[in-house]
Length: 236
Image (cartoon, rainbow, N blue to C red):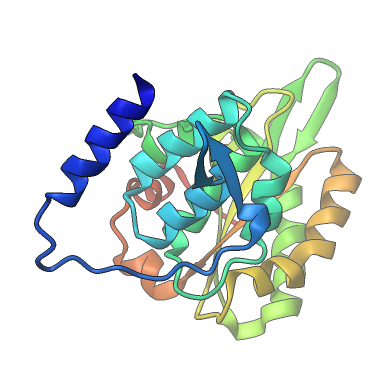
């Protein structure tokens, strides 16, 4: 029965008009292909990265990624490693969406409606029982380090997410948007700032997560992610 259904599907597909149909040859490695019901398909990781390259809107990209992560089809660490190697041409907003999905596991940042009275970081201090996290100190130290790395290329540093809203939990990351005048590859900026972010994370006992954006995209972009950061962001 399954073979008959598959044969009918293939026959229907072949009957479809091919006018204006464009086929692109994919550069696939063996590790990016798996078998599903005796058919070769791309792995969930490769599928998500392909969706990012095709400029799928941020909301649907986040939903697909979150679903794959929650079902155990996609590994967060593998996604982060793949993001560090992304080639040119991938939309910065899509990169940010995937990075947030990989580090957070929920889509609260890009698509939750921003409140007009979103709470800011109060006196730079967030309390967790007996421990205290000085967010403003982290931002000041981070900005100093970024200025040493980028100089005049650095156009803005903005805290966003749960710490900007004031509803951070113990396991929350300190999410920071870094706006640069321009850059060639996202992965290069991740590498350039990896030591700074790691040192701050170790010193403060919290993960400092950096997202990079070109200045023109920050000024002209209209994605849900950018709109939310503009509404809730706290400049360093």
